[in-house]
Length: 391
Ligand SMILES: [Zn+2]
Image (tube, rainbow, N blue to C red; front, side):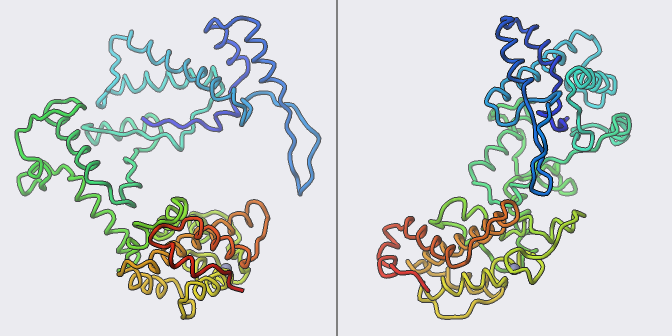
């Protein structure tokens, strides 16, 4: 079961916190100090750029206070201890396998904790995971608790190629669990793993082969993005890790651009904040937007690349071709792509969240400086010749 607390820090009740501290036998004086720190919070609210009069808080832990995480852990200790008391009930089972009585008891325990502490469990974000539970039992449980069925998180394995070592390790664990019922890796195997992974119709158990599945999941993503692969730009990119991270997320179309937020039903102004002309999409933002275009038309000649800036697809195709050869110029270009995508995304965010605007000229200088800072043996020569700013 996966639980989610609604606004956890803001809703802890002070008397509850005090009782927990007392029950854990902290000295009275200490408890008083802690409570004084907790209870002397005031808040002000910004309305149209003006601050309101401060008002006092009635519950909750202070955000950003180094003491708060520790207090929160103590509050959760209460839940841990009440869950532990459950095993005194003879019919209770920690791994219920569809045993509705046990699930009810577990849930009751959460609810009692919720009532005592003020921490509300967020019903929309709770999910329950099943293994070996019949469809009918699953439905009954979901209906009883009014929560949704969870799916195992597959996000990372769908975006990144997992290292062989990792997929092997996962498989070894699955295999060991299948034969021995234990999570630790053992060597007992009655049937070759490849066979276990075969579809049932072919005599297998239809268990997933992690490496094959990882590959398939990534191919699915690639398919969505046409045949052009970003791999060569992202891999062995000597730019900052943050740059390549944002580039990878962008390449997979997973950045939270306004068009995606809109698709989720969020009411957002869809205009691109960089140019105020077109709507913001991944395709628009990084090459087509006049801001990005201006940036590129400084950065391409700087690298002695003489061609106009094109759209997303054309740029990708060009990058694909360019990165086939591993020259210093290629390495530099890969870094420039990652840096530019990162800085355009940063600029977009600081405009939205901090209302700060930086012109493309300043950003292009920053990118060039940062690329110089990341010079390697391979790129030192070419960067030495590029010791100038485009104007
Ligand atoms: Zn734009």
